[in-house]
Image (cartoon, rainbow, N blue to C red; front, side, top):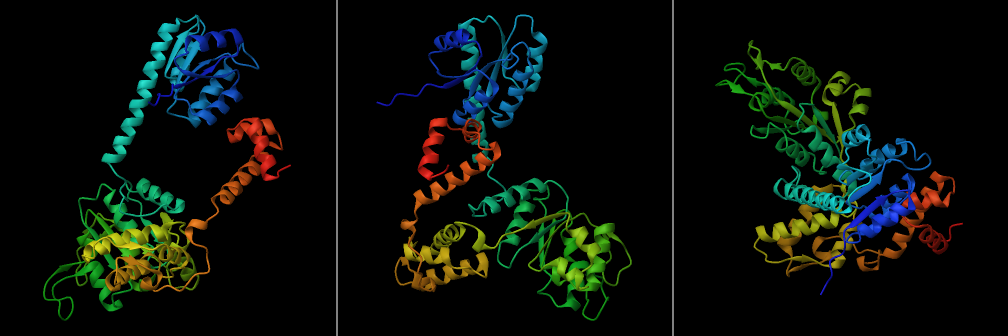
Length: 452
């Protein structure tokens, strides 16, 4: 039968006698102790306790509260969910209220009743648990707006957070990246997470429509404006009123239309071809291109003033070959999707296929990988997709199970220790505190890694 581990309680107190008394009084908890600000922060980094009791008077000047308030600010900065109970003197009401203003959970006057303080500590633990559970439930009930985007790459996850942050604004967003990296997926995610999500998302590829037709597609036309204009037709900009207009391959927009688009972005009104009436349009513009717009500006092929109108928020999307772990992750997801669509049952990728996928450079990015997997699912004879089914060349790389995890971990530890030693000018005590480990552990690691 398993035994539930006691909850950790950090006691910050510089008086050894009182510290010992508190450890005895709170023996139902797993007590940790610290006698000054630095050791307290080290304990927080190392153990991340849910509840902390702390005295405001700490060394080097125990008669002042400056060190205690500094610790409170730093502690809540690194661990904002931690519940801090401040212990103050009998006539210390002002400092107690100041501590609450800074974010402390509660305060107790010294000398305190252990039973009453124990009740407050238990209540703090319950509040901590409830907040953690509420956060978990919110994440389950309200998945991220870009939950359809499959990635584990750190850069892509940061891009997702950026998209979610700017979604509530009306800022124009420019998505830059190679073809097939998922620019339209991000644009749709931006729309779906914005207040405009109930209105239309209208997309147009500026490179796919002939120049002589693109103007009428964007701005619409009046009846009789040109041969074949049998009726008044609104353009894409007008159709997207209240919603989002996605202009893909904006770098291919002809110069005359660049001027007209710039005027719309400035005035937020359009005129249909053959019309004289100004039509106000409320629309959020999201643009994308695989081209280098700054180079096009130098070549005189793209207006600089239009670029600055479009580039209020710029998002650079990395190619698939730079997203660590994503090719294999996406491949597995595509296999499941296309196997279901094609009624092929439970199909899986072999280890050799995954290795080949991870090693391939994918110049066509996610779109190329998606097409490759779809073809393999349709054409494969069995339920296991091999490297040959996918059509990739043999590899000289080692298979996945031979990745030397210990070597990778040791290199990460080496880099962390070297960085910390540099920050502390070789001070081993401070290095251990920064790393959140004990000095004996640091000595052991340095010895094992050959660090002097």
